[in-house]
Image 1 (tube, helix red, strand yellow):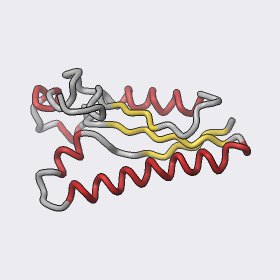
Image 2 (cartoon, helix red, strand yellow):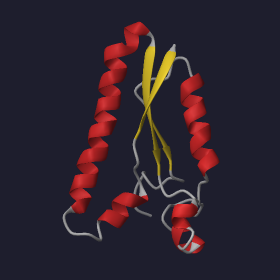
Image 3 (cartoon, rainbow, N blue to C red):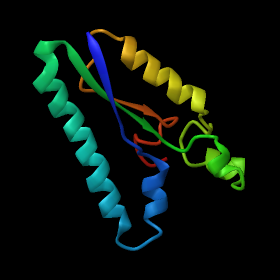
Image 4 (cartoon, rainbow, N blue to C red):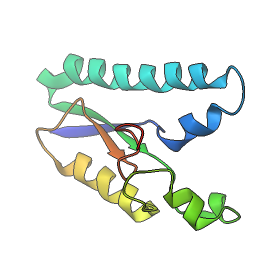
Length: 117
């Protein structure tokens, strides 16, 4: 099966967007729309053997967060961990190699997408 990936950011950014009035809803609509498109494309192209999946990283340890406290970033998910870029890359590799996985949103956010904790 060929593979196509749709990237969708999700997780702590939704919490951060809550700090700016009116932006949380836009973030939710946008990310929810990308997830819905992923599922729709997966269904539409399954007979051609093309898979569509999304990777939804949360806060990732990266230069973007170099000035943020690591303990604060770790507190944004129930595992108390800070995923690295390699964790996101491993999810992408898995989805490109998994022959019969399609229409999935793979969260790489140490459980932040699940619920409040």
